[in-house]
Length: 211
Image: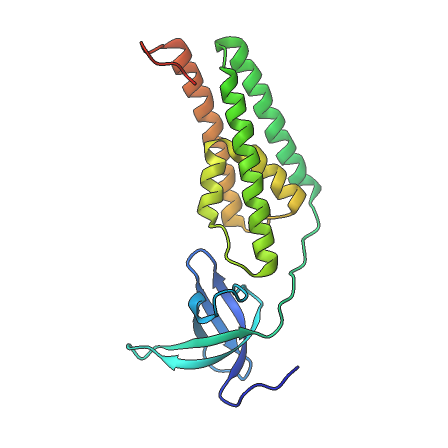
């Protein structure tokens, strides 16, 4: 490993919140953790992530808080892709198959407009593309797609594409908080689909058509 200037320290990013753009570095030489904001890394460089090794300098802000500045990655290595879990894949397949069954039951009872199926398909393709772009950004250390964006696009109808992306790209399958929010949005979307389809097909509003 190349030597670094005497005024630079080395350390590992031990906590990182990618949505909020900050975390903490544990210095190799010991001592208290050092605050790291994503702006401390030059734009175009590697986006910080947990487990990354950096060299950095120390400064104090106007409140006397010590923080890392002019941080540079020591090694940019692609993180290992987790081995697919059969149970998780089965849950995803069952969720999509279950929704298809719900769709056909709703269509047979109330007559769901074809445009609804087209909308779900289009949003699923868009969601898959967003996951693929975010996966690529994660590998290259570039700026990521916010998780809130992935959740919103999935919640309005793109979640089947999200499930396919998660299983084929092995992306967004490890964070429990994201997984909980994702599956909650899937349930809400399916419930909303059934209720809205039932309501607007059984309680028509003059001059209004459901897509």
